[in-house]
Length: 437
Ligand SMILES: [Zn+2]
Image (cartoon, rainbow, N blue to C red; front, side, top):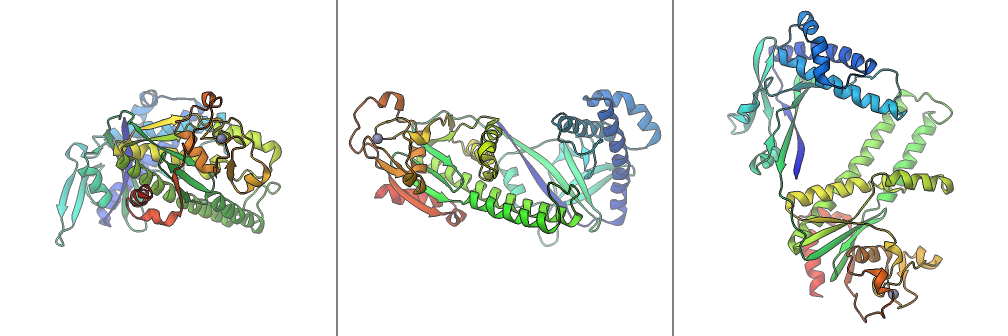
């Protein structure tokens, strides 16, 4: 399985001459991009080769860019046109024509010296600077980029850079920002004997094996509610809402800012969680078991809830279920840990000890978030019950007819706060402590 990662590198401040050379290309590129994207949308051109065939001669006459920019700008335009048409089809396009806000220069293997990557210069202070050559109207120029720890990590671990790179200009500081895509092929791993299952919900992430169960408080639901209140307040004070359709500029900015902040917080925690859990699985030589989330699951839930609830805040979409699953999967591939997906139907309604089916919790149990089995008396936190059932060790449809086995499920449990995830292998240490009990 192939994984890709985008690495962002900033340049040192460039000399005026170099920056001008890039801006010349950039201005032409932007102009052509706008024209081609409009054309592709109007005429529904979905192939960059076709676009190139139509306009190559004309572009060459009107501009004097190095040839390969005409190739990449066609790809850029077709990509933009396609996603705009897709939006329009869904009725989500807000404008008649695609709006081009951020332009980055698309490079192919000829426009920068991809084949000689990576080349370094060493500064007087011993720091390494990555050098890439870039083709401009004034010939090839050398761009000095500042490599960081992560960049070297990927390089050392055998990730390979792809030919397609992108550049953006930072006018104020006379810098450029370069985007490289790295890829690496990973082996798929066979499912191992042991299992570590993971349940993700609004308040916590619970996971464990037959021996131990750990719950980490994440409060994604609370985070969502907090930012939803912030959002509402901004919308009220800046007079945006359902009835007034025009949002104020400042209001829009604020909304964007807080939206981004919320997302960053969540994604940070999700990444850490995924990493720690996969570390643990690796240490236990276990296969990770995740809930199988159907592709249109979120929409379904939203549709279902819309009837009864006005607020849709705690939907799985809002707490970022898919994102978390993706992080776990990618980290697992990188670490060489196998992953399986299990259909989650009725997981919270089945007794993991005796297999009693479709147990409806009473109000009191629901409030305490506890699962109580009326048949065998087994009782445990609801989210832990989901973890045990995900382990799939109890084929409940069969087990339901069998008498309960005494103490067949008695893993030790622990609830912890999310801040301990900062430390590498923290979950490994905790689980080792639990297993000794
Ligand atoms: Zn039971």
